[in-house]
Image (cartoon, rainbow, N blue to C red):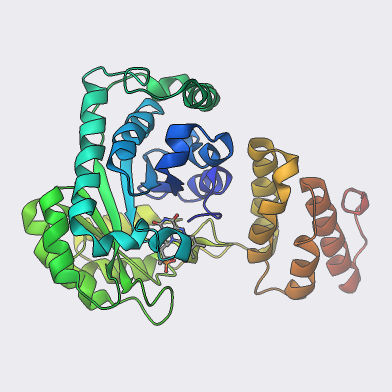
Length: 365
Ligand SMILES: Cc1cc2nc3c(=O)[nH]c(=O)nc-3n(C[C@H](O)[C@H](O)[C@H](O)COP(=O)(O)O)c2cc1C
């Protein structure tokens, strides 16, 4: 999710209940091919996230060909094309969910992205596809920040598409028939139209219908929309017949949401419904994970970008006494140290109100 699931967040998610696959935020193909360093930040990842899929968006076939090379060169495990973003500046220019209206172009983008990954496997280099020096330097800079093993083998990576059920109406049958022609390995479907944005509810009947149409062609289908827990995920998979689901907003402030995924997976093998209760960390554990997240964010993205961490801090604050006050304070912090001080003050006050002595380690600020 753009502006949310950055590499620091994905790293914390991977540490506290690793999902089967992870997607980066979407990155514009133009930014990739022109080497805009700041935009390329969204293509950072750490090894613990694997398998990690890079998501790209845009509308120029030639740039998809080049961007596919870059994604392979950076060592990603898959390439995903965004055909679902409803935001005005993306969709109205014909990218993201705007592509639902231009099926021929959508197929051309898939074709060029696939050709890009295949030509890269065949040995073609970034220099050979005509990327400018600025782009080559930016990509090299990003590569050096990743693990060396990331770029070792020239292996074909799967290509996938993430989309919605339609533009201004549910047209999943026609749209599925179109996407099938592109033969992506996976199609992920958010059960809303572009016009709905995030309003109403995800239409899981439409997703189930799409799964039935798409899967016979050997293409996997992942459903998406409004899932808040692994248990809900398990029910949705069974009822819709999809091969899996994607969880987005349900992970905000809950990077542990995938904790227990092994039990869910096992329940599919045994055919029994998953009965494991959801993992709910206590307040101490929540604060510990929040601090770990803040600290990792600062290390990866630098203290000057800490403002971007604030929304995550706010999302951690719900369901405990004085959460709103704590949230209001946390969204004004500038560093992990600020966060640590607030946590210490909160815990000291909590102990004091229970009539207990305040340990010296908690009072340092
Ligand atoms: C702030 C925000 C940013 C998003 N950015 C992306 C994105 O970059 N790529 C993408 O495929 N979907 C993006 N989405 C859509 C989500 O991936 C997901 O399809 C949608 O939120 C519905 O699933 P959920 O109910 O599990 O969140 C974004 C959603 C939100 C709220």
